[in-house]
Image (tube, rainbow, N blue to C red):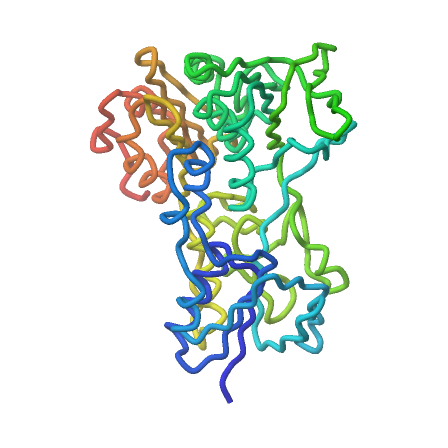
Length: 413
């Protein structure tokens, strides 16, 4: 009999897993279940759509026909209620039961809502799905004033939407700089200046106490932690994700700020794997558990999970150095690896729009941030993959035209 594979989630992790399973096992039964109403789309490009820079067409990656052509059963608008590991069954709200031999969980997360008054008012947006992007694009196009909350990589996307759509916006941040866990003040000031040039004003050492609404329940202003009130008929919030694991209660699957998996993307429950944002995986480079929400990482995890689900022999490890780029300014921005981890670091500013920071753990490079010149990324990522100890050669690493051949690396490494 053919094997039966069920995948919960049709993001890039779930979709790439389905494609890989079909390639590895042409006779398998493959089902993809998603609560969204459309097939896989590019989550990286939806921010350009929301900015009004792209039409919808290039953002869609797979039409429903793509799945049919590969004999993959795609179940849209389908809500999973629970999983029974003993019976090897996935139960849904109104679409019946799906039996599996192997199961992949790739459901990602849901944006966290601010725990303040009126945080669910009309005009307050979270940025995660294509449908979110459509609402944001339309509303930002009509708005005059705005507030963005969340000093991270998704928050700055919302700030860029405001800038592109001509919204007079304040960008509220809890600390003294944007992405304070990944940047020093020197690096962050490059971003601050770029935001102000585009009409977005950073507000530091603050937060949100609540929102004021009109008689129709639409947001009209934001009250910050210092008691300041900012007019805002558009609000974007990006303060993190709540992982979609409610339906896994009672399965015994281990969770720790996400679903815990090993280097083969397998959970502690037999025949159940996980991939994508939702995972807390064992990183063979760091030699510890880690999380990563980048597109490339999620795709690779889906492919590795699929190969190991189908494998009838030696398993394949997930070993990946991720990167995340921002293209909202006149200069490029890229983070790679794990720039917020480590026990040592170094940085250098080369010009008003060029800066570099590297992070180390146990003497080894584990991540970094490049502003202005992202050309060295491949050389740095290669050092991370090789796990060589280079923290004692910071001057060489920070040379503007860094050449890895100038590093003194012991032969045994």
